[in-house]
Length: 223
Length: 313
Image 1: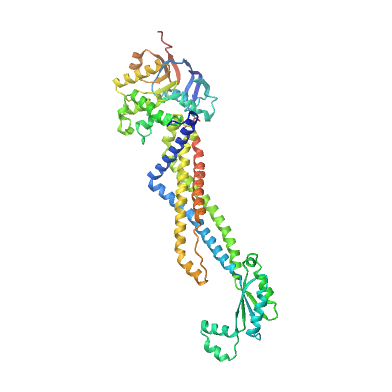
Image 2: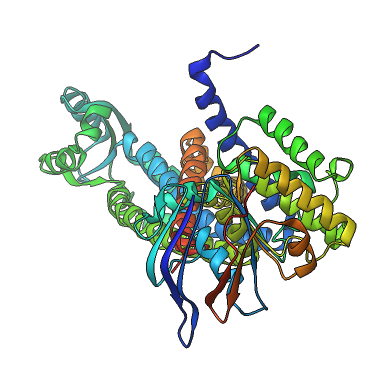
């Protein structure tokens, strides 16, 4: 589902990622760890085609991202649910409207939008706050709105950048449990985190980045 | 009631456009200061050529109503008696281009001048009546339309009894020439101001885009196409143009109403039932439609850049 082959991302002065190669099978879930600045966010941004790789081949959900025409990018992004460390919510829209946005851009009918957006909000436990504006929500709640927005279109791939960074341990577990549920119904997930404790207890495949290079890959854990 | 299955995409599409249009109107009305400022600029820019157009249009109509009267004055030689003048009038009346002939006898002319000029005493001093008999000839409307009034004047001037024949409204023809010039000026002004409006709308929209940068980026991140992102801005521009056109039309019509009093007084002096026209539905529709179209075009220019937002390098 996600194929990195010798992918390098170079910014003006330095290489953010160098020679990254790994495959994530459909329905696989993996953690991406590393210190800040190790290139975790960059790697996730490549998957969502927020940025293009400088070199190498990157295939996501069957698309060769290097060859994808610009006007096809929106359709690729609809297949990749992105969860951001800084939430990236629309501050002047309610939680419901934020979650409904991906459905609106894909031309889903209003009736269906209402149904699916509420289902997503319910999944992250925020159905009661659907009318709240982001600034009226705590950091953790905002993060969950961001997660609801990412899963509302039921994309085959979800990438998450520090999704539990603003959550207390209990909520972190709930969110991880939610990711586990999604994974069990076949969603491919790549989750960047530096919460080693969480990673250690979850027993999923873990990719470690160190200064832009893939330092360690635990591989797919056995059954 | 559920629509047939094949209509659902159309329904959804229409709904999305309606949402974008109404959302844009809502945003427009919720940002009063910026909106009102640009609205006034557009309105004034629209009102100027509209008002000039109305002035030219009304002048033309007024002149046409005068020219239609096509009246000529034939001054006869002083030795021609009133009786001879009346005989001549009968003859002239038979001319194909002549509708009617009125004879002003020598004594009547004198009396009229005495009454109107106040030079009565001076006339008494002259002793002899210096006034000739006069034929006031009204041309047929068909002759006036065909522009044969001047030729008729020349023809009548060559009669042996005539001293001189005058086409009273020579200046009308000249003024009509001027209005043709003014008409072209209206077009030039309209084009220039339309270009101005285009840039004003483009610039206002650029500010709006900057203010909503975050929203544009996030929409792109969740898979919004360039068309989806552009849509509300295009509607926004169209609303600005439409409302600006409406306000401009009101400004022009109200300004024109200020001229209505003096204009009808002037018209009454010439014995005409002339009334100012405010362009009717045609001008109204043109200004609203043209405004919306201009706003849309200006917005289009501004949002071309939006293709780049949220896109990878």
